[in-house]
Amino acid sequence: MNEYIKWGGAGIVLALVGAVAIASEIQHGLEVGDPLPVIYGGAVVFAALVTILIVAPSFRTSPDPDHD
Image 1 (tube, helix red, strand yellow):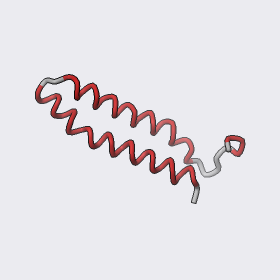
Image 2 (image 1 turned 135 degrees about the horizontal axis):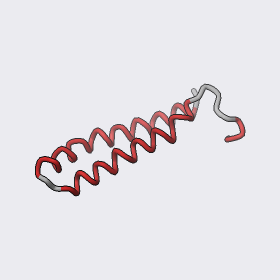
Image 3 (image 1 turned 180 degrees about the horizontal axis):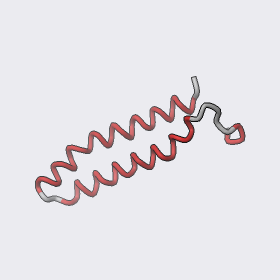
Image 4 (image 1 turned 45 degrees about the horizontal axis):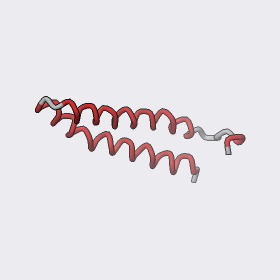
């Protein structure tokens, strides 16, 4: 199995799970008017997006041989 897909996929799944898990905290912060959970949750979602943008290009069928 392609190691890029195996470990990159695991990283993306972990980032998405973190973003989904923090969604309730963001919602709670919005309901009570507390900006700290919203800011923290936004940072987690931003980190998940950055992770996806960095890892997703490695899912090519033939990675760059000079990179290894």
